[in-house]
Image (cartoon, rainbow, N blue to C red; front, side, top):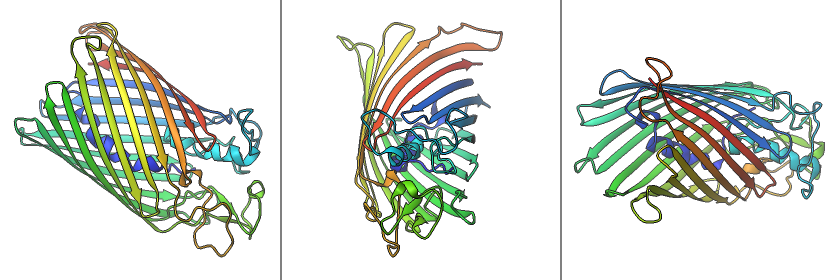
Length: 405
């Protein structure tokens, strides 16, 4: 079950580079997070995250993170059992399949599709990140990370290198990044495993505009080659209906995508802290993103986050994100067997999505220890609601604790 993330993931490298783990804070800490993604067609994803940061010296730190996703673990019905979702939804099995394939769009985990085409399949995804960062005499900062993830039909290995340089008394920071995804795909409708590589390039500038305002701009380019499909979907051709495509036949064929893909993403953002007045001790973060690729998909993303200290200990975050995209050039309502490219992926169709969220964190006072060497940092809880125009909606719940040692 391939861990292909949605179209907006082309900008994820930019976001990660601007807020890489090594930049989080100059302290030793560990963090444990738990997530639940509950979809409206009985698909569920349970995720656990453990992260650890350790300062080796004043200029060097190392980072470790482990992530596990349990996708619909024994919560569905019999194999191939599908429900249509909300009462006002139409489309039956076809609609539910679209929703199940959107799991990766929200959670980053795999699409959960059973061997009979339903949404009650199970899978487990393991992901590991190892990294280190170093400041070289306040001249340049370097970070290196290695990510590995594995599940039943998808494996990925991704090294990342980032360089950062400060200018103008540290009011301007230039960031350069490169990563390479080396993936192996072995979906259930594939005869043999196939490889895919993605080269990701990023450049960004962070500028201090005032003691209360910081601006960021960035550009990323992704060059992908190899097997672009997930190997888990079939496409009905020559007038066959989608609900009959549970096995590969002459009229139910594998997806066929172009063998290469070039993506561009442009990012701009501003963070402003309010001091005094009604908004005292609060901040707002605004981010805008434009994306295009040579599959003729263009997208726009607007993201707003508002942070407010309710007291010395309590911090509230409210967030909203809107996303819209056009369809890939080869997406059609129906295909014939002679069409060169074929897709049944809803993530290549025109769609809009909305994400609404609230997060509450309790910040322990410095020195509140649970042992001689470990102090309490924060306890956090988050709820988000996600919806897409293809009929997907999801409830996302997170709880986390951060320890300092």
